[in-house]
Image (tube, rainbow, N blue to C red):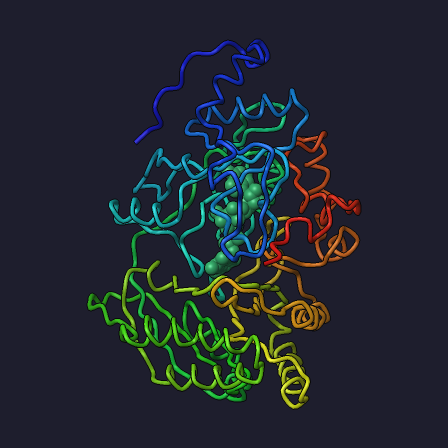
Length: 488
Ligand SMILES: Cc1cc2nc3c(=O)[nH]c(=O)nc-3n(C[C@H](O)[C@H](O)[C@H](O)COP(=O)(O)OP(=O)(O)OC[C@H]3O[C@@H](n4cnc5c(N)ncnc54)[C@H](O)[C@@H]3O)c2cc1C
């Protein structure tokens, strides 16, 4: 299904201001609209941009950019706000992309799909399934937009699977100068490699051509093992299946090992009962986390209860994306770092020593759980955290029961210090403390990336506060890391 044909307009520069305003009026959200304020899914960052546009056509995107250029405004594209940071926030123009969601072409012979950038992965799975195709790998959820996934190097798990951005074959971008360009590994390769994990700052991504494959089913086995068993056999466990992820429950000293492989089995075997998933899993644990805000010692008991409830081995067989995805439950603070795979065991031992110390200290931190451990193969994307090396991703979480704040900063700081010591690079979508001088040491192509931005967007139209702070080292108050912090 193709997007409807846009009206004929004179060249952008010839459109009078008033006509431009009139053309944009139907897609400009009134200040009274709840969508005029943008809050991320985790309820940790919020912004109220000067203007929020909801374009339905690519031509309308060109008009928004034209207005921004004339008024000297910055433009930030937002997906559906699943980044657990202020990566998508802006105080100026926001372009909400969810209506740019058409599938433009599905090619079952050459195994690719061409879609508009605002399509969600859920919609993409459904469209691909009609052609007996599927994405090659998927992360924990499919709510995100395809552009959101690509521009942050979102990953799933699997020693031999690279981050999802590596499946992109070509991109159509709207650049800061108003030009539409197509880039790929052969055409404008520097722009392409910068945009694959470009944090929305190389231009507005309009279309994405993505490599896909024949639809497949997965059989996932989940088993609980003592931490020491997992750490002593980590390499064997991580290589034993195509997609391995580990959930570590430190206060119970166990790890839930989830191992998924392709299967021709047809029977769906649901992993858990309704009672556990909706009543116990969701409401009881959330209530205990709520109590844990006041009586932190409870968090350890909640962890032990949770592992006890989920201790049986379970097997699930289903369509690939349904097995990859899971219920990420409540709003949350989270951070995740990528370390060289070879450092995994030593890093996990250091994390365990630290968490044991916290546990034995009566005034120590009492974190939520689990820590998530995943794997990906190395890639060649300039700013990809798994660039150039097979990678282990380790994430930590503090839930916000009923949306209420919980302490997390000291916990994450100590976590990050340990991950840094092991060569860690933060997930770009998640809040972190690194600045250009740190990033330059971690990413050999960092300066090449900045050079591409200076070339395609010299005035920084697509740079928001996050990008100015982390990539350009701006220190003024307006770029402060708490400028969009949601305080309640
Ligand atoms: C519950 C949950 C589970 C998650 N699971 C995983 C996981 O398994 N693996 C993983 O790696 N990450 C994971 N993430 C992180 C998530 O994949 C990224 O934050 C992703 O960017 C979110 O996409 P979004 O559509 O919400 O984009 P947003 O958060 O709205 O925006 C993210 C970035 O995309 C840019 N952007 C959006 N659209 C465009 C466009 N058209 N052109 C240019 N730039 C654009 C924005 O400017 C911004 O820089 C998870 C997040 C949550 C909340």
